[in-house]
Amino acid sequence: MKAIRSRIKKFMLMVMMGLAVAMLSIAACGGANEATDESGAAGMELDTLAQVEVKRGGILKVTSFGTHTTLDPPFLLTGHDIIITIHTYDNLVQIMPDMTLKPMLATSWEPNDDLTAYTFHLRKGVKFHHGKEFKAEDVVATFNRLLDPELDSPARSALAVIQNIEILDDHTVRFDLDAPNAFFPESLSLYQGRIVPSDIDPSRFALEEFGTGAFMITEHLPGERTVMVRNPDYWDEGLPYLDGITVITIPEAATRAEALKSGDIDFILGMEDKLALTLEAHPETKVLETASAKYLGLYMNMTVKPFDNVLLRKAIQAATDREAIRQSALLGKGSIANDHPIAPNDPHFASQHAPPAYDIELARSLLAQAGYPDGIDLTLVTSAAGAPMVEFAVAMKERAAPAGIRINIKEVPEGDFWSKVWLVEPFATMWWNGRPPDAALSVTYLSDAKWNESQYKNPTLDALVKRARGERDLADRQATYAEIQRILIEDAPRIVAVFTPVLNGARTDVQGIEAHPLNWPLFHEAWLDE
Image (cartoon, rainbow, N blue to C red; front, top):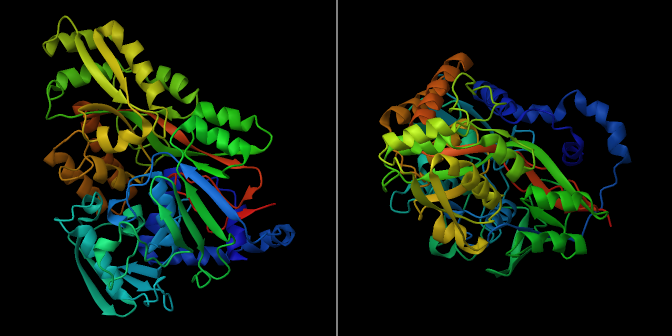
């Protein structure tokens, strides 16, 4: 019943407000989210539940942007690999579509008084797909890999607060942190944090899976398809409902949409707005949508000329017409962003700090001060790789031109963007799934972050991000995050132009799936009404 109930809840909380409240509650009383399943609201839902007839069985055919890169959790990048691993592995905790934390391989947790240590109680009786019993040793092995500087996982900067992991018994571990951190439990839900077994040679993880998840891989053909079947011994009783999931590689966004209409696939993770309109109009498809902190923009590598010049970056900032971008790239959906990843509906958003409004004269003046009185020619690399980045680039080109910022657009195939352009080219479009403020800042702006696209290094900002982790009081965190936002607007290492809604495409007979504000696919409760 618990599994079905979560399907019909109305996820009306704003994305980050709900998360902030949930995180503070969990930090205070650890694992208290379990009690929400037994709340008084449950009784009100029973009549509705009695009318819901979940159908078991069937194969869900899924596709996403990008293609396969690896199954090894510390290095996950593309939507394909996230779909596969979120269903074949488990995290200790999982952020759900209503932005609360669900206990997964951890059943509960509690911090010490000053938030410098967290004790996690682990689920008993769980087995990995190859037969090993899940124990504390597997948690230690997983996070030691994530923190290994030689391995250099992109998640290392987000987890660097971990100083030591102590095994208290087979099913209890304590994370000792190097500073107070109210957000620590949520950080363990990141998609690189899938728990792997301690008895398998890590070199096998790239092409094989050894998870505890709801599904098991039976066929893995990178670049073509991955076939998963139901785990009959899954610890979450009664789940999953599906017999299996097949993840299919379809390189082009338009081709993915046509495959959904024809019934060749059942679900698309991550849709462009213009294609979503065609699915809304089709009688056999639907669009699952939710607000999010997912954002669209561009980055400038500050170690490469001319982007080492802050005046040039600020000229580009002043020449960014955010409303024109929202209209052309998002068809009027989403909301305006202020060159940082904290969304307007987050309690930590500082409305008093904003970049200049679209101002051609200011952009010209800044460009001249930067040493380019006659303007500048720039090449912006982009792709239709999971978001309307091409439309964004076109809007940037057209609206920046009157300021003398002459942008040449170089579009590359979708399959090449994440491997050959992102983090390689000095001036490129980008988009990111929404993350809680600490995670969003840690993974892209900290000086040692592997995914620091702009190579931005600011010790003051590093210290502020870390200080906010230890601030229990919302007002204190708001003040700290306000200063962070001011600095990022002033330094302009990236243009974060708009926040985009999460859009997923589905056949009308696909049930039990909600659009997730973090654009995560959760098919454990999915079923086909065939």
